[in-house]
Picture (cartoon, one colour):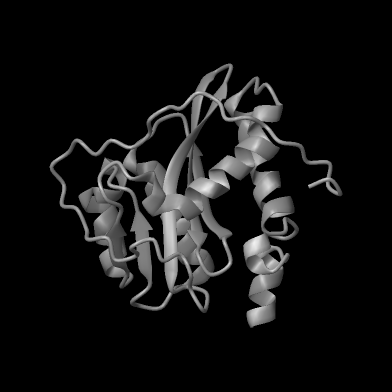
Length: 199
């Protein structure tokens, strides 16, 4: 952290983003907090979070490959609807072309439980997995990513527009987090370097 000029940023006010008060079916918790995957495209996880701008809230949906913690899909919107989560999923599928049987884990939010989202998962052979009710520890790997991007980027600036925040997020994910940011859990390697080592 010192070498990269990174300092601690304290937690900000919490905003709930999971709407689990719905009538959609809930998938079992197949992941069961086992965030380890010996190879890419075995376990994915997705969550939605939020960023405050002077134009209002910007919502960010992210999908990680749990093998390397690499961000493989993401999308932003001014509304927290299922289309936001679907766009992130479609990006990840296009980028990785996962084999059938890959576990996709999320919280119980209506975006992930919706018929449209679950249909895409079935079409591509995913095994759907969902957290226990109100349990953020079941999506801890993705929550850790959000804590990181907020501490290292989001909370360090005042965002005048959603577009400026989106551009900065893109640069952070593709220009720093995936190719360069080191993780102790990956032996001090970045997500991209860790995947190359395994390949």
